[in-house]
Image (tube, rainbow, N blue to C red):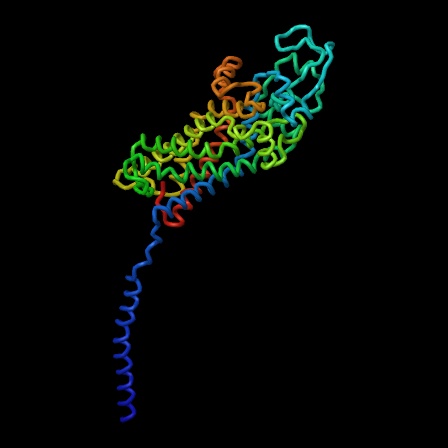
Length: 417
């Protein structure tokens, strides 16, 4: 009996202990569940601006690697049908790149008897092989000088042009100008995307630290912010844009115009001086202002419009995420392409021409002169040459860069655009 009582007493004690322990354990678990999570890193205005600058550049640098082949074809399409002009001897002699390739002497027998652009001299310098970038028009092995002088080159559509480039220059040409393109995005897009929220705060009257992302503002403020950030970024990055265009254009010798970015900078400095690195800065800045204003303003507006849509129950139909970013960036790419294609054509043609030491262009005296001559010679729709490729480039580029930009911001706890 004594043993039985001891066992019963022991069992009762264990049961009581279990009852006491159960609430304690439950209390512990409740305490753990109610423990607040550690707050995210609090960004200072300076840190947040620096992060946005880095993320904006990273997104566009990744995007340009995938869109560079389309950019090459776009440049070639925009240069088709470009006006032909014979340079003065000083223009040719000032450039070592020209003297080794383009100085060709022909006898009067090779020159047709008429034509306003033909010289009656016994020796004529032919410049069409250098200044005329119609890659799909001139075969590498063609040496028939008279046919190049007397006839106006035809233009090719997208598919024939693609085949011609692939056949004559090989697939590697589609990555031409990639290095300066990446460098350009690292400067240009770092500034234009990274400083967009900064200028939104300034133009909205909230100050440089007022807009930390995610806030809604007027369309006017968005456009002005895009115009300012785009102009600032493109002006600083103009030398890289100039080199990119010239490397992507056709070169009859079969070799790039420059061997590297350093060689391009050195050659341009020797031939054209420091101002040569800023050829076309006006159309470049104008294009960048329109690109950034139309791209970011349309993206910002479309995204916030989608987020405000409600269903029949009054709940939001869309939430911040990939779907909203994809739809908004797709629309932004189309708006951007339509608004900037004419300026882009003028910019490419003006930058691609040869300049002498005095800064005189072989084909156009200014960006406005380029636009006027293009329209007069080829019609208004010539300004939209390469529009399809412009959209195929800007569309994916906008989607990739803005989606990466938004994801990187979200990853570190910075509010979305």
